[in-house]
Image (cartoon, rainbow, N blue to C red; front, side, top):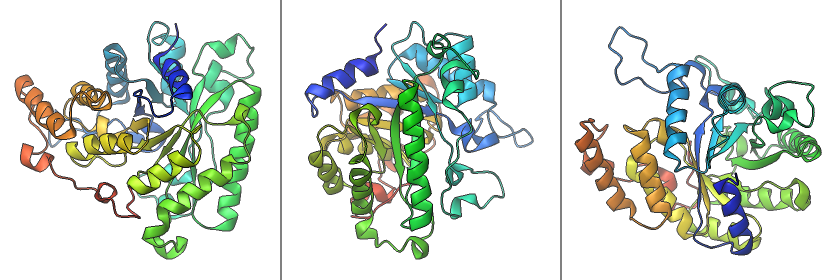
Length: 350
């Protein structure tokens, strides 16, 4: 079965700014947050454990796969081992399984830790063999059992030595991936250190990231290139600049922190308007009152069937019909609250 992702990538290769849009659901938070990864359990009482369990998290993935509106399901290696390899859930699904291929220290969000304030260090828990086959060593046939797409993330901090190590680790990953026929998409985070450390003026952040991407990929042949990018949306100018520079690059945006429903819907619509053709939402989906309805609205916006404003109102209508209490009243949920959406030149997302 040809996955819908591959159909869209083929179409975008011939018409970079065509109508096709890739949506990924990121359910890989267990590689970052630990216990809190599945999100709050709305049914928990004051004396109960506040978070959903890993089994509940995986059950939501099964439901999203059955719905079939996302193009990619991003998971941890252990979740993919269970759902992709053992349960074979993707065999008859149009959704493509993907696994977080590295977990750098800036996403180690452990309670009481301070890793996120220190310069990002390269690290990967899951080797490619485990992602593709669930074991190592493995045969060529074994590699067909698991996921063959990974998310690789890099964080540049405007610090020569940490950034050099980041680039070196990405080069080594690309060479291994190319040798094993493993595809990847590339996530480029904004600096994770304080502004006093990275010393980048806010109005230069988008340019810093764009230049790093273009400079880095200039040294990468087609055989090792990411299938698309996932970056912070810094506003129309920087999105258009990157898309215009090299039309062979499919640019996508990351969703960032939860925010309001309008934050998420407006981000997708505006990013697409200015050239993006992919979006990956993690916390925005996982913290929604009704994840399946939220995803259906994202798909309608991506298909240009509805405006972000109409989608927020329709979403609240669906919640009301289902008897689900919204996190925010409609008026509040129609507000933009995240700086990244205010189009300031250096706006960033968490």
